[in-house]
Length: 308
Image (cartoon, rainbow, N blue to C red; front, side):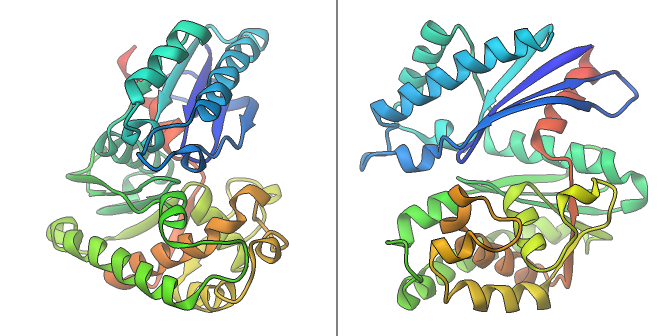
């Protein structure tokens, strides 16, 4: 069957059209996306601004037309942290339903972590044993761990690269060192509070990172480009990340955008993402994270197929 998966993330809105069959990997057929940057469309009260809502409604309506044009028989539409945490989320969802004729399912943070874990487990298989999965999004950091298809621990922390950048980093130049120190203390204290619970099941046999921020960090640190295909092994080591972080702390957003693997609209968030990634590796006692090409969208597809 041909499905559309409409993912309204905190940074990017993305429609992925896939050919999906139970017992087989979903194969991408077409991709349509827009860097809506919903975290940048929040006012001081935490509401999505009218301009942000207008852009979202237009994208969803356009994405539904694209899915229809590409032959998708149904569209699985969901939203994550930016909509989940917005104080006017009900109004935003109502406008999307009324004007774009699409019902967005808002995933809770723990469901987001669980579905991402499912995708990573299916990609790497049972040989990964006790698996730890980390995903830095625009609004939140998802962490999941377990030895089965479903994690024993799945949680979401408000440590997304977009959220932290908005709250801690001002301006487009090289980040202020005092701001970075304050953000680093905040990030590490938040993660440290949950390390014991996550590691209660023991050390990870396999530690994995997924989604765009980790992929970009790995690419900047020397991992193979996406053009080499999904089956090339890619890792982000703690040593390489620390060297990269030291460099990112001295660069403006425009300079970061010139580095390999960085989209221009995410460049201002990369130093923040690196601070979170460094905290994850340090506090969980990891020397490296392997990058998984599958993430939340694939998890949504896999669970949908399992239910059929």
